[in-house]
Length: 330
Ligand SMILES: N#Cc1c(N)n[nH]c1N1CCCC1
Picture 1 (cartoon, rainbow, N blue to C red):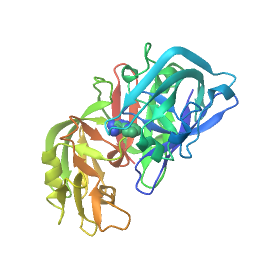
Picture 2: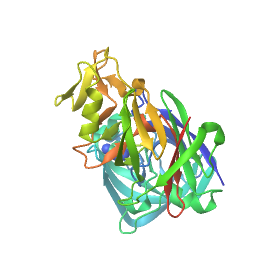
Picture 3: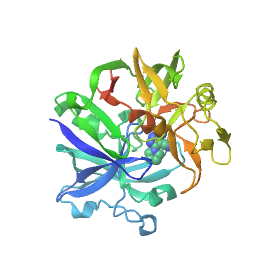
Picture 4: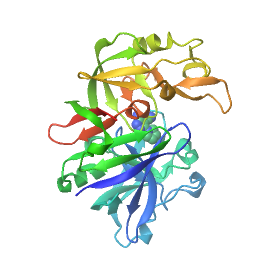
């Protein structure tokens, strides 16, 4: 089996991407945020209070002849940015890009935090982290990828995110048309359940490459790149007018400033993030102050290679035993 589905940016700065999925019988279509940084599959639903729904598509299990309540099971998740949701659990037929899982645990939201309510283009999340992170209790549930894995031609999914264009999530195969050159695979540490790997170093613009280990997670559910302060200050030293603003919560700079590229290493391979990805967005519509796509990870306790980095590569999430992660140019 294989599957392939589009990853569509939800706004003009690629803050997140959504992918269509169908749930139940007859099929209900929702747009979900595929997130390699978490492992819950949850959806806005008929159980979500109307006051917390602002145009999102919802899943109504009572309209699906194949839905079954997972008696006595609940879930509750809080993300690194403070957003949260919780609810109960059904199992139902679930399809992504032609790939179907018969009894997928679908976590229906009975409560979502305000940032999810205001994100009207996201109808829920599909976790692609390791199932050890799943929050369903008393029995934790498997991710869509873990449920599908045995029937996949190859136990992999690939991520091809694009700037301001539709990219792709492929399941079960590696599409040679989506990348150039070789794929560089490196080991993954599955503790604590993320796709954790070690980058081999970085360079700012045309500067020399600094070989150093940077351990972090490949996270499609995070918009920006969060790296150690020393690396981030070295970058913004090259940006005139850049400052680390407590007010805006990170590095900002005049939108007119020239930005260097940022290169990161995976093994012997080198990936360059274009300056345009790092000039992330004006801090407010029409403002001449821009917020950087590269920020310090010092407050997070973890380095995160989010969409700003993933957009610069074709990435293979290899779910074999042991898992590895592969990076290729495109
Ligand atoms: N914070 C955060 C975060 C993360 N590190 N991965 N996915 C996240 N979210 C998905 C939806 C809201 C936040």
